[in-house]
Image (cartoon, rainbow, N blue to C red; front, side, top):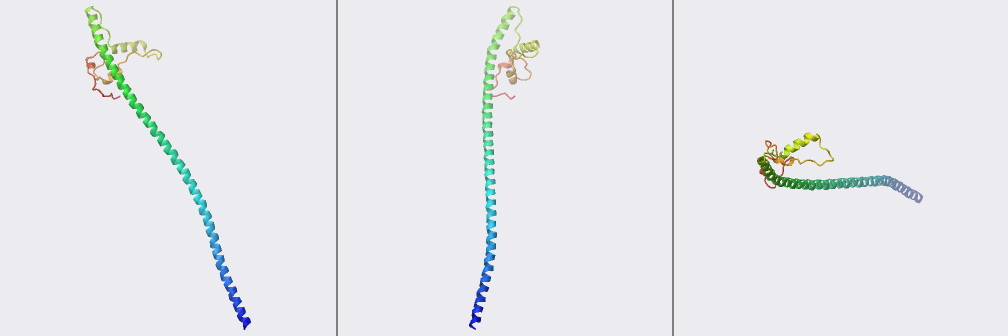
Length: 178
């Protein structure tokens, strides 16, 4: 009986070994599956990080483009302000020159009339005559005096620089609308 007890004890040990081996195989299979899942997830994580880096680079490139666009807008705004300022200065200068020219012309016309001479043509008449003679303006020759800046400020009924409406100036600080 002792032999039977020993055999039963050995069979029980074999059964336990078998159960533990099966349990170990199951754990080993799960471990292998987990390991493969871990490697797969690590690859995915690496891909995600690479994609994130690419997206961040693209974002930075777009931010730089926007920064450059903003800088260009600022430059254009400053250029427009400077151009408007230059235009206003030129208009004021043109008004001053016209204010100097008009009394001189009126004086010369009055003197000419006392001597029986014809009056001098107005600036716009000279411009029309110059255009008719030259056809098109030669780019190498200096441009003739054009009353265009003043015409912007004049009512449509006044065609000539010599008209009385030029004695009125636009309010200071106003700019013409082109």
